[in-house]
Image (cartoon, rainbow, N blue to C red; front, side, top):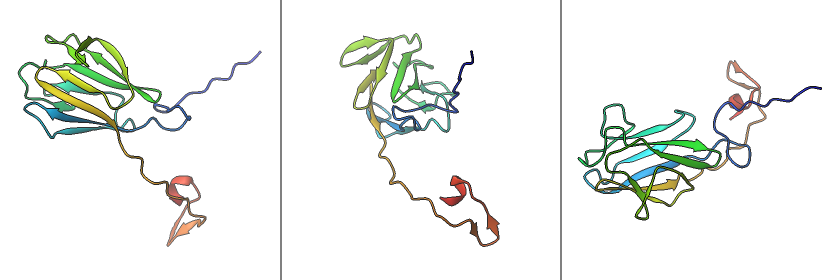
Length: 144
């Protein structure tokens, strides 16, 4: 008997394609207006807090140095509070590990973050040409 093993090279969405891209935007607090694009082709997870290693660095004194982590889980996001001092809330309810689908407002310290799916770029049809000047290639990436 043989087994078929499929290995994904990155996060996968519901349709088997790449996981959707999300945007986290600061809507209230000292850093209002800042945003972070969650692009899974660039990183496997994103860290939010005050610390120097955070992908979204917040100035809110009530936010921990490493407050929370966001990673993909299929077409959803998985938010994990990293043992922060003041906790993470969604809709006033304290959460430790929760799945997000977009549209949620995350509260940490005096800061509010809104999670939204990034607009999907229009699909670009592949060209049937096999060369561009002296460059020759037949892969999908070369044809885009």
